[in-house]
Amino acid sequence: MAFLELLDQVGGTGRFQILQLMALVVPIVLLTMQNMAENFSADNGTSQAGVTGALSPQALLAVSVPRGPNQQPHQCLRFRQPQWQLLDPNATATSWSEAATEPCVDGWVYDRSSFTSTTVTKWDLVCDSQFLKPVSQSIYLAGVLVGAAVCGHVSDRFGRKRVLTWNYLQTAVSGTVAAFAPTFPLYCLFRFLVAFAVAGIMMNSGSLLMEWTSARARPLVMTLNSVGFSFGQMLMAALAYGVRDWSLLQLAISVPFILSFVYSWWLPESARWLLITGKLDWGLQELQRVAAINGKRAAGDALTMEVVLSALQEEVSRGQDPVSLGTLFCTPGLRLRTWVSLMICQAPDRTRPAHLPTAPRFAFAFTFYGLALNLQALGSNIFLLQLLLGAVDLPAKMGTLLLLSRLGRRPLQAGSLVLSGLCVLANTLVPHEMGALRSALAVLGLGALGASFTCVSIFLSELFPTVLRMTAVGLGQMAARGGAILGPLVLLLGVYAPSLPLLVHGTVPLLSGLAALLLPETQNLPLPDTIHDIQNQALKKARHSPPRCVVLKATQL
Image (tube, rainbow, N blue to C red; front, side):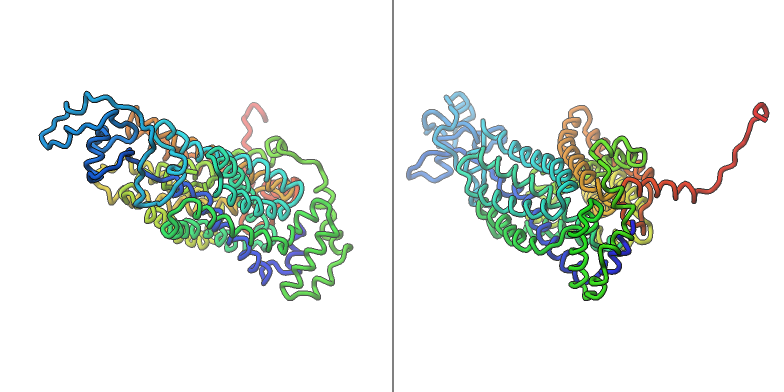
């Protein structure tokens, strides 16, 4: 853990950290819009019509399309022959209910009042093909899951910057190609590749920020990084409101990643990772480079290989020990951290039900759906809903920054999850007629989840050593996808009892919050670099624990 001494020497809070934060947060804003793209690009209502003539559109619909269950024109059927008798105002339901119908064979007329073009209108994802719309969202979700699994391990092996730079390029290219995809399967393929890269960007951005920042500044830096997701939600609402064509919208959120790819070559690799994995010359160069940017060139020149070796001799030797995914589950000091982290760990986004953003960790992602159910009072204005969901996050995350330094990581993580769970459970007791109270509880719960997201992004990185940090973060991302998949499925329990989905959505974060109390506090502790550092932390905690009296039974004396 002597790397902190080297980081303080070159500057752990300076000009470089500010520039790095700006460079990494901008793509976070953009990738949040990628996560939410299908909320807008795959939204459209339909009505069947394929006839023309001198009659008004309403009259044409009346004689050509039967009424559906909601007494609106049926979306998937039409009359085989025009039913002119239906123009008679005295016509009864019998006049058309017995008429022969057939599926739409000449196409559909779409409601284009909200969007001029969507993936639904381009590939006619309606009627018998309507199941393909959620399939594309599931494929995107699978891309994030696979990307989290692959990018986490690869980043621990080949470095954070290399993977991040490749992810920027992959997002730009795949997102741009998706905008011009000629077929729906190709569109899904390139959206999968976008999601794969998005997972890597989220993980490596946070890791670089954590590993280049001093312990005291980490909460501020990671909170600002988290705020990037909130701004991305709000900016997506504004962009989708102005750009109503899905392909242009896809281009608008993909092309800017080319700029991120270009300037990412300037970003230095994590010196902490380089030194711990034995790449000493490269690590020393990066430290000297950061020192020059922070105006500490003399301190950087004073750094030599001998200084680095004397400061990190033990860490470098232990950093060469072989580690793998199994180490997280087999090592005594890491096993409990891993299992509990998977419960509270990452969600958003982020695919989700239509018009709703994704969530970041398992309990967070899982609970988000229970809370979102209570925001339907906002109606069908998806732009306003998207804007509000981003705005609710901001005060919660800024409040989290203040509480992190006063309460610590563990109490805040546990408290925010418990509060969100209680908000969901409370809504099972509030009558539906009290819509304002139900919405207030939902917004409070969403704010608590925003605090949980900010806290876990710091807490998780501080719990695991540098040699396995990205692997652990990748596991968290995979847990989030599990939460995002299970969240909507829990709604099916409403068949048995209307309040059952909310009970499940509320219980999961409640239990996860209580489990978070089993984790060690990491406030003001240096980032662990090796498994030995984790074990040392446990030993120090045991030494500082208050002594316990041992009472012997009379038979033992």
